[in-house]
Length: 572
Ligand code: ADP
Ligand code: MG
Image (cartoon, rainbow, N blue to C red; front, side, top):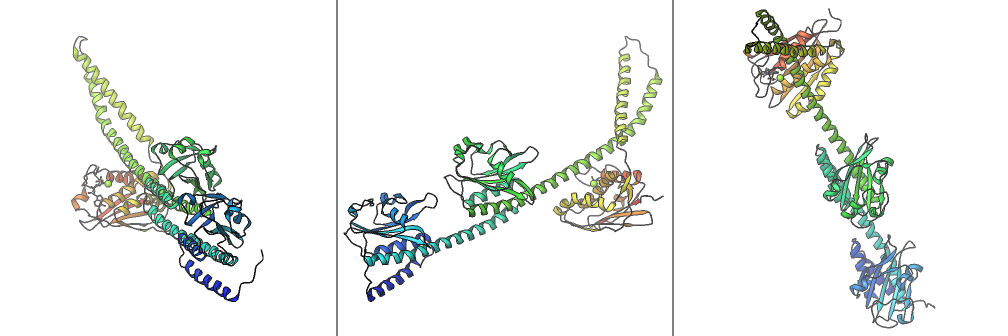
């Protein structure tokens, strides 16, 4: 086709038009608006009857009409493969195509009966085709070479503007996601309840990823399986999904390889374990990322879409970021649960220890009178004739006393098997261990803890378990004496050579001299749920078992101090 050089005034007009169009299409950063403006300008500029802007779908590689003017809704649905029709030809060759009479060209696919001529130009971005811009007319030979040149120039500009709007949208999208992630981080870290954290994570994943279902599985390393712990958006059936073997499941491989995996359609994937459930719940595309905390992998976080979808690198990044936030929150909550459990065990141990000591005490008190009763009974030599019912009664009394004796012996031998075993004990380390377990209770009660532990403290010769129990009793008593908060200070030091002292000083309710006088008697308590055994046991442990001493300083509303004095290891 011969081209004549356009006259100078036409060039000028061409330039002016482009400048104006450029201003219009650059007036928005919103992709849909930009496409709309581009087509509107093209149709108007070309005085066309109708027009369409077509983009390549990067997944399907089909040409899809994004915006159209003067086309029926049905015609807009047309999707062309690259190479088919006028649009497909332009997309394939990257060349413009101008048909003066569409009826004579075999490439033309009619979408509107009255169209006579067409002009189609490629949308090229750095040589790469992103789409095609079409204009049509009911007149034959409606478009000139000059108009073709103008539309090509407009298309070049438009491609750049469209691209910019996509970039802008991607940035804006990321900014929104980042902000959402930030809120999620705050939300999931604001709870220490594991179930609660898991629920929040799955709900957040669905929202962030705009997907149908999210599931969170935690690794049970002992059993080598993944257990479903939380799920958002799925049916009740899904929630009762059995555990997955780590070695032979898709999500298991995420945990094994510590890498994300995506499956385009789990309903057609052989390795997917619960295809029936997936079909029932309409789960399609899966993206699963590992939950990692430091070196440890603790499970997997997975999202499912309701329609086929290819997750982008960006999607993967977002889900992975959420997963690492989640792993921290989960590990935190798990650690917290362990502390709560340990505290509960400790309380249980205290109760059992108390009962054990009490039982031994009671057994001891019963044994002596029982021995006397048995002796006296036998010396009575009650001999009744066999026909006298009292003969049977006397037999029963003797049997029952023997039974009681056995029970008492058993209790005493149990107590003896729990005799203290003395070993060198570092008192400071022991206190730190006990404080680890009571720290939360003190915090809850708004008790400020101040410790001043002496360096180079001589070791004690003591039964560690018993000494722990005594310290625990004193700390709990101090906390209970400060129901509205206060300060507990614990100090260690050396009193006289060979005597180690630990002081528990509180700012609590204090005691009257009368209370102090009977402090170590069992069953004396001022508390609604007290046992009154705590200090009796402290006394047994410190004074009886360890040859130590207890000093008390106290006055009502002035707080209380307990000084526990213990002989150092090797002291005479
Ligand atoms: P319980 O704690 O079950 O009441 P204890 O033998 O441990 O039994 O304590 C007996 C009583 O001694 C308590 O009920 C309380 O009245 C008093 N008591 C113990 N320690 C303190 C303290 N640090 N401050 C004030 N009173 C205390
Ligand atoms: Mg107590």
